[in-house]
Length: 51
Image 1 (tube, one colour):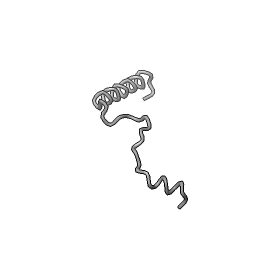
Image 2 (cartoon, rainbow, N blue to C red):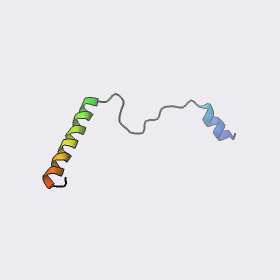
Image 3 (cartoon, helix red, strand yellow):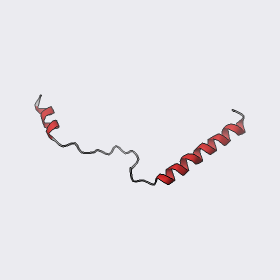
Image 4 (cartoon, rainbow, N blue to C red):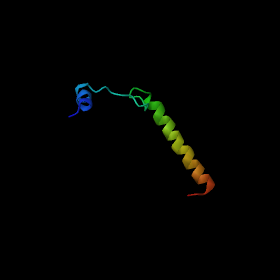
């Protein structure tokens, strides 16, 4: 093991935020917006005659 890997292995791993969705966010709002998008897309597809 080199000194760099030994130093990295010795440090405790912190949970790094990568900018993704938060775990404590408003889940209901996400579901409502998601289903709204699905309905709008289905209306668009049927109105344009793609299905």
